[in-house]
Picture 1 (cartoon, rainbow, N blue to C red):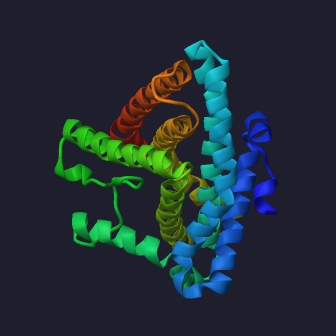
Picture 2 (picture 1 turned 180 degrees about the vertical axis):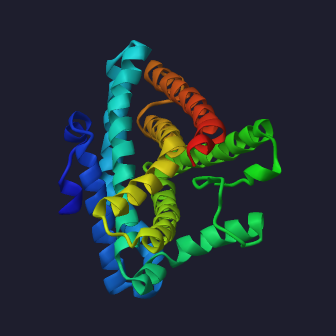
Length: 300
C-alpha cells in the first residue's frame, strides 16, 4: 500500500521525470527484499515485486486514458493526451533500468551473480546461440532477442530486428488485453535483462580502464557508466516506447470490452483510438530498428 500510494496517474502525467525516482525506488526495494527473503530465487522475485508495486499505477492510468477516449473527439488531441501517460511510462521503465544497473555495478560480485542469475543465464544462452559463447553480444536486440549483425546485410538485419520487435509488441498487446496491466511484466523483465547487459558492459570496461590508467579519476568511472547506458538507450528507448504504446492500446481495449457493449458508439471510438495507437507503435518499432542498424554502430 505504501509504494503504490506514492504517485497517482494525474501527478505522474504532470511530472513524468519524477517517475524515474519512483521506478528506481520500486526496483530497489523489490531487489533488496528479494535478496533478503527469497535469495535463491531473487532474480525472478525482484521482477515480480517490482511489477506488483507498479500495477496499481499502470492500471489506474489505463482507466484514465480510456475515459479520455470518451471525452475527447479529435484524434490528434487524444494522442497528445496519451503522450503524457506514455512519457511517464518510459521514465518509470528508465528508473527500473537505472536501479538494476546501479546495483549490478556497485554490489559485490557474489550478490550480483545470485540476484541476476536468470538474467545472466538468458544473456549467456543468447551469446552461445549466436557467437558460440566466445564473447558478449556485439549487436543485440535485448528486448526481443539477439541477431548477429556480422552474419547478414544491413537490410536483412533491419528486417529481422523489426520482425522480432513486432513479436514482442504483440505480446505486450495480448498481455495488456488479457491481464489489464500485464505488459508491465514483460517490460520489467526486459529492464532487468538490459540492466544485466549494461552492467556487464560497464564492469568489463571499468576493469580495462582501471588497468590502463589506474582509474585515478572518478570522472572516468562515471564516463563508462553513462557510456554503457547510452549504448542501449539510443535504440532501446524508442523500442520501449513502442511496447508501452502497444500495452496502452491493449489495456484500453480490455477496459472497453468490460464496460461497453460491442457495436456501440463509445466502443467504436475506443477501438479506433486503439488501432491508431497500434499503428503508431509499429511505426516507432521501425524507427527503432533503423537506429539500431544504422546509427548505434556508428558510435559503438
